[in-house]
Image 1 (cartoon, rainbow, N blue to C red):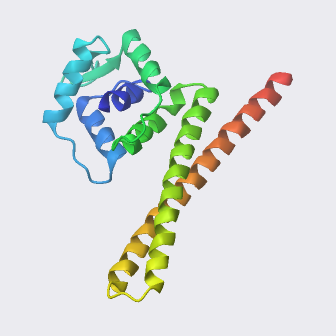
Image 2 (image 1 turned 90 degrees about the vertical axis):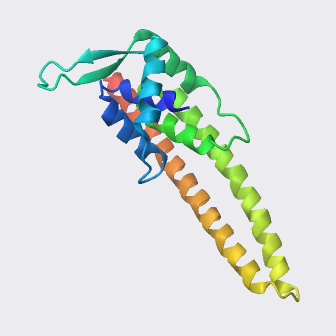
Length: 191
């Protein structure tokens, strides 16, 4: 899973293992630390697969080595970007976040497909949360001794619903941005 993010980041520029470790940690959740015990075996695996090579930083007195993506790595990156995200996978959100970090490297059609797939999954989640929310509201109206627990459950579900709505708004804005860019490029090409 982490290979997608690493290859995507290397599509933009060469990076040190230290920098890639920071990018990987920030792509997951704030303040998550990725250990060297995770990062360096991952880089070794990518190197062994021919996805990356290490080059010396020419102006660095410490002889820092930078990871550089190869043509094989670019092919693997594009293959991973094109693969649909599997259903019912606990890592779906992370996979989509990694794909979002690599959107700059794929064409607008694929960008829109990835974003639309994500929007569809978020809509499915929101529908489930709405059903649970309605059920809990119904339970709250009944004579029960669990009103405080039900109320806490409602609050938690409402947070999840708000997050889904924010994700939907974000996807809509991103899709609008892509559309505007496409229209701008078309207008520019007409002249």
